[in-house]
Amino acid sequence: MFDFLKVEAPRLTPQQIAHSFRWLGWIGFWLQSVLGVIPILVVLTTVLFNPKQRQSSGLSFGLWLAIACLIMLIFSIYWSFRYTQLSASLETALLRPAKSQVLRNLKLGLFANFGTMTIAVIIALTRVGELTFKMLTLPQGATVVVPHQIGTTVAAPGTLITPSNMIAIQAMINAIASGLVGAVIALLLLYQVGLHRNLDA
Image 1 (cartoon, rainbow, N blue to C red):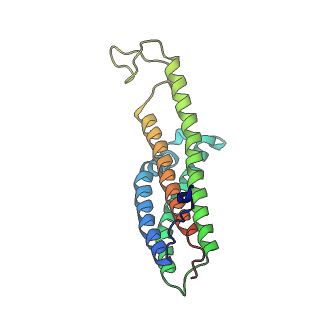
Image 2 (cartoon, rainbow, N blue to C red; image 1 turned 180 degrees about the vertical axis):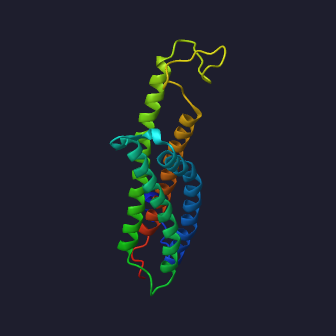
Image 3 (spheres, rainbow, N blue to C red; image 1 turned 60 degrees about the vertical axis):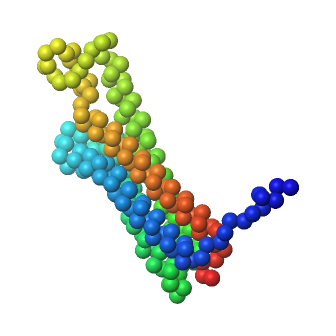
């Protein structure tokens, strides 16, 4: 009874694991690169070309979080590329690293992607909360599109929701999606490496 629960998953050879590292690494690298374009451009533009974000004591806490998220995002993109390099070592018995070292690399990539998602979610919750509060302060039925446009109600300065706000939200969503892609790939590779008792064999 319930003998089907005792069926073991097929063990993968080091060559099969290396193949998975190569194609999953490239998939992760390109997907994260495409998703990471908007967050990278938004943060760099804010830091380099928006002096309003700079306070007398330095950058705001939110911008520091965005910079930390950007650094972790760039690292996770690089780490996906590193999986493709690791695949070459896994294919050659003389260069093949120990299973513990491979697991450490995968766990580091997993933590980096979880870190990216965590910081991006914190920033998104804060930013969307601010925009929601601004919307709630507008008069009921008011429409705010462009300042001084005829037929619209313009609230106090600073309460307008601009295209830059929407681009920032899109950047946060992209950062979360990029971290999710990297985390899923790291988990898939961790599972495959776990199916092999010893990569040195």
